Image 1 (cartoon, rainbow, N blue to C red):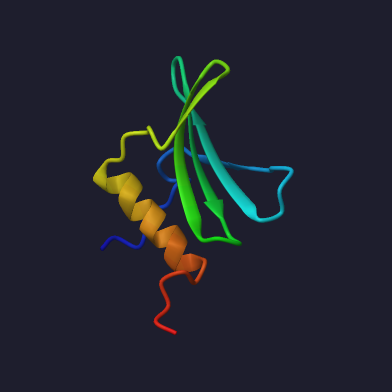
Image 2: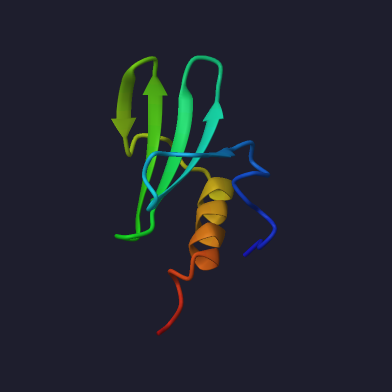
Length: 83
């Protein structure tokens, strides 16, 4: 596992949301936005693609680097602790 891979290293930018329990990372591609949401109250992660105003939750393709960055973020949040 590569602990150095982060969402920021992959081009995602952390953005503010109106929800205190949501951590949002976003990147702008040529014709769509990619988003990864971490909901800290429920420990749920969404990966989204946005085409203009149309959002497709859970539809962003994940490669191994993105999966590693998500794993590292979950570990940082304490979601993977044994206890």
